[in-house]
Length: 229
DNA sequence: GTCCAGGGTTCGT
DNA sequence: ACGAACCATGGA
Image (cartoon, rainbow, N blue to C red):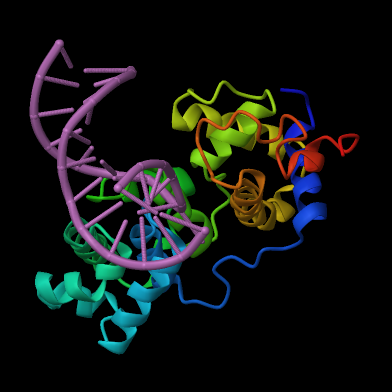
């Protein structure tokens, strides 16, 4: 990985697509709920689930802990895996309430918070980093399937490396390119741009489509290969 | 009808 | 430490 490759990819994506405005204006709690609901699920379905929670007055940690499994499951049905996700939401909300208010999480450093979140049932590495970045304003680089696919096709990784191996290498590379005060908004925007690009890159979003970012058959190839038509 | 989405847990090897 | 089955809806 060359010295500035990660930030250069960022500037390329930002120039192509502009700002994505991910999770703006929502409360931290709503972002946290969304992070669980969107696991392996299209965001459009998550919006329906959140709206149904809102209409049932279930959009608070206390309500989700107290309400019955079946009522919550029915509310979040559109997001899929509703029985699994109901358990995960309850576990996460119980943890959240045990911490007191949102401000009581500020006293932990990011690595400590990550371990705390990962110990909650239903929170894996990606959901954890979504919460850290988009709800708690921590500077972490979110690794998802799109990130692996795109960075792999740009030759930076094989794509099979463990989650934290990719994350730490990208974070080290990025932080060497930017001062600390400016890195949080870049992490925030970067993941959103990767998702946006992945959707543009391959019409069918096929994991085995080897053309994305590699040749002109990919609709988004010119983003990284300006000389290609 | 088929594929897959802003994943994680559990249970084999 | 790694692989596979499992969970379930809705849009393309």
